Image (cartoon, rainbow, N blue to C red; front, side, top):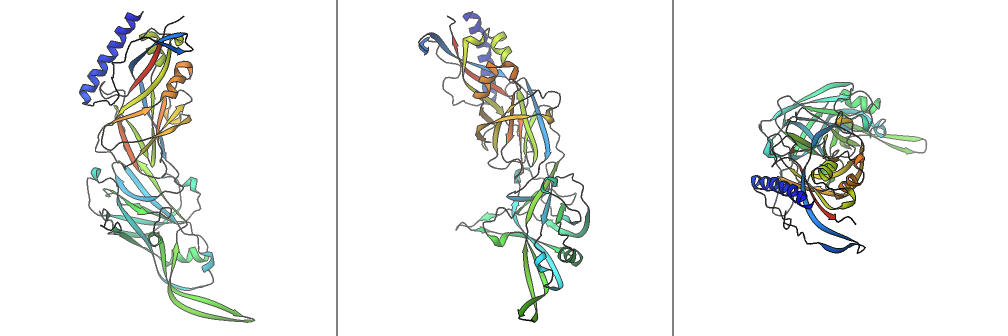
Length: 432
């Protein structure tokens, strides 16, 4: 039996050699395919003898689980524009108007000031031309969970801003202070302001990019302000009344001034028209997409290698995935991946897949290599022990509801050197 096993392992090692030569990648893992066949003793209670072996199995099935726009409760940045298939709108709400009700004599002008934080992923921007934006007053109530791109809301167009999208990348001075702050001023009409102050209908604003937008701008959110002066703010200029009560006498003093009203909710909504190619799989933040992968571990162990469950113990299982460079990438530095168990078959309807427990480990998507290694040892041990519970593994971005980003990988339809592989290190025991 061992001779047949050696032949089959040799075939997997040959495929691995071809894959590594094509990739031009040198694995850091010591002695790949060169593990000692010396029989050890005392591996399990001094009773079983075992040999440490290695095998590479291709992942058999892959799919993308599309969640779509996710509710973003406290995003660190606000995104607006169009880029690489993604469209993003900004929503801002101000609800601190009740206290102003009796103090407002008249409103002369109001502007919304937002502070830019540069642009998203300059490498995938095709057109840096300035673009315009439309500002809508939201006329119907909503909850955080409603704030999805296709949520139906009543709106009224109140402003059109030319050259809203200036292409500007922030930089840092030698003294580590942020320079070149990019601010945008949005005029707000008096009808909107009076409805907010007197009718308490402050449902907020939705700002939408024009169709010709060629990149996505980032703005300061109320949830990520190192300096309060850069928070989104309404500057309301007009005449305001100060009340002074002395016994039965009340004195009214008018003041011409500008009040600053800060936002209470800031968020963004995203849509994505990017169509995933047949030989690609995609992770995405903002517009949620997860990767689902499965391999028939039982077939490879028992049918291909001729082993039975009592003969082996999985020591290490590492999933290898190759990034697929694409002009449609929107990559944010530091995208972090999480690994999930899958609780049901997903082959017929991947978008409705139920994810199980999450791994305690996280993996940063590297910026300088196309190869990603993910430890799934715990899952592989479960699949080997309970083959009927092997529904595969799900890879999901950690910050799916607070950032924008996309990572593209080769799927199981790609060449053998590019497709996802599972590397197993296991101990084969002699049966008593």
